[in-house]
Length: 266
Image (cartoon, rainbow, N blue to C red; front, side, top):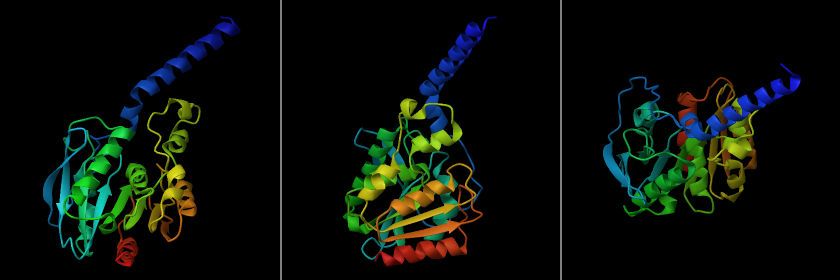
C-alpha cells in the first residue's frame, strides 16, 4: 500500500468520525436516562406542576411554596443528566432556608416530550420564569440557580435582566471549550451546534453572582469556574473547594455559604 493510500484512508476514517459526531452530538451532550439517584427521601413539601412552554409542551416541575411574599423564589435549572430525583439531596437543604423553589425538568427529561437543544432549553427556562411571574412574582423576587449545563441556561436568562441573584454551580466557560477537553483533535468550534457561551454573557450580568466549583472536577475543569468568577461583575462571591468533584458535596460549609448568599439578597 502506498503512502498516499494510507493518508487517504486516514482522512476517510477521520471524516467519517466527524460526520458521526456531528449527527449524534446531542446524544453525547444530553443524557436524560442516566441515573445517579442515591435513594434520598424528599424531606421538603413539593407540589408537582406543569410548566407550559411557548411552543406547546408541558414540562414537569416541582414547586415548594413557603411564603411567596416574604421570601425569594429559586428557579433551579439542572444539568445534562438524570431526573429531578437526582437532585433531592440538594433540594432537602432548601427546607432549612427561607426560600421557595421551582425546579423544572428539561424537555426530553423526566418523561417530558420534546428534544433538548440549546435553543429549546432557553425556551424551557424562559417559560418557567413566565410561570413564576404569573404567580405575581417580579424579577427581583427570583433567584436563578444553574447546575453544570444548567449554568448555560441561567446565564442566558440572567443577562441584561434584574433578577435578585444568580448561582452558578460548576459552570463552564463555553461548551466549545468543555468539548475540546474531551475531543482535543476534533474541530468542535465548527461542528458544535449547542455552544452555551457563558464567557460571552457573564459581563452582561449585573446582579449578585455566587460561583461554586471543586478543584477535583473531572468533567468541567476547575479553571473554567474560576475564570467565570473572575469575569463576573461585582458583587460576586465564590465557594471553591479542593476535593469536590463535579457533583459538589452539599456539606455544612457549602450550605452555610449558600444560605448566607440568599440572605444577602433580601
